[in-house]
Length: 308
Ligand code: RIB
Image (cartoon, rainbow, N blue to C red):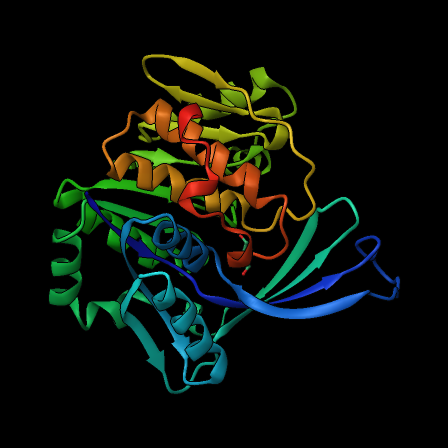
């Protein structure tokens, strides 16, 4: 099986369940609060590990109990955590998440050590980084660490002709066009695609237009997810629609991470892009029916292999 390297964030999630997300100036009572492992990069690494993949994570945590808990949680599902730096002067990243009765969330992130994962920090170990990239087949990144770092790793990964997957979350507006060149797969949801392109994505036609504009910037494949409405694969050859299974979502946190991870794993196992998308959809359809980020990730047996 091919090896996957995740370069990204680790957060301790502070999750508050509440009837609705508070509006500006509003004070409301939450039902309960829990601390649970999260972070987009760590969620993806955890999912690949739990689903049986070969995965290493490169990231940073603080020298505190949250950092240790996050590393332990990853190690428990077989993720290689040897390239997770423990920083003396930065706290572990945190995410403050409100979940409403519909399962929708809003998230505020305090980057902490994730923000300190600069090219300088990992560049100090460039030989290790090169070795890690060389020893991996698929490199998966998100945008919860500095963009310069994602760019730096992407360039190195491209020079070794590795498969590069970027989950462009959280999406930001000021990404230079050159960043996208040479990325094999991006997986934005409709909102992220709209932020990245500056174009509306309210209809399927608009999403396809937005995806095509990302192809013009040099991305090879765009997988645009639309929650319960399925997803689209857009590349220079075709546009394909994938219906999603209807489920009752109670918490959508990390559903996108679960999709990306399962998709990357299926590619690592030699499945076609189409089968990998179906596997990603199935994994995330299960994740949204459960609470938490890493806590919601299914295991292999739970995913209906026949549909993938
Ligand atoms: O994608 C979900 C994740 O976003 C959460 O686990 C939280 O840590 C934020 O990074």
